[in-house]
Amino acid sequence: MGEIIEFPSNGSSGQGYIAFPADGAGSAPGIIVLQEWWGLVDQIKRTCDRFALAGFTALAPDLYHGTTVPLTEPDEAGKQMMALKMESAAKDLSGAVDELIRRTGRTHVGVIGFCMGGGLALVLGTQRPDAVAAVVPAYGLIPWPDAQPDFSKLGAAVLGHAAEEDDFFTPDAARALEAELQGMGKNVQFHHYPGAGHAFFNEDRPEAYDHDSAELLWDRTIAFFREQLS
View 1: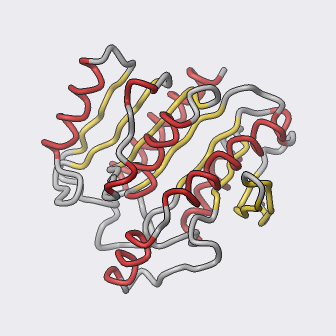
View 2: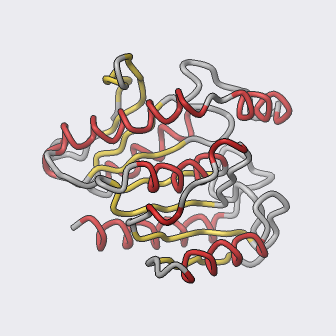
């Protein structure tokens, strides 16, 4: 359904996977989909395809620039994540936003990310408040010291998803983030998923995947994006 494209990225070029709804890019709101620490793997591409079937134009920028890590090698994935250069990633993220705006003809986009992508979704919301209207961090991590977001700049509505059995983005961390954003007057709501662990949306990881929680996350996310981007 989708294809790999290149797009301008602050004087350079980025690439990513884009999927279109049946009526074309100009018929639908745009969604940025941000990878887990494995890279732009098939599961992220299928998530873009699924957004397209739901009536969105979805673009997943390739933040590792062609590198993917097998799902059996979390140590290597962690190394790739920590080696990610924030300056380069910021260019790719902003370029992806501009590409979606160009293709859809709309002034605002939504962004969803998983694991490290969830953290970057929040970062992007603070870096591009002019264009990002809806942010969905799913068990989002921000492990990079130089990427801590300035939430005072966040203008988007936020819908967070947190797993109650998550050892990486713990329930306490999720509640603390929600309280921090609420205290700043932001439009934010977090959903907590009992019995689910980190990465419960990734159907390619049977040891982590939780079907019922994943489907609930999806339904809530689609409703949120339709409300915020209509």
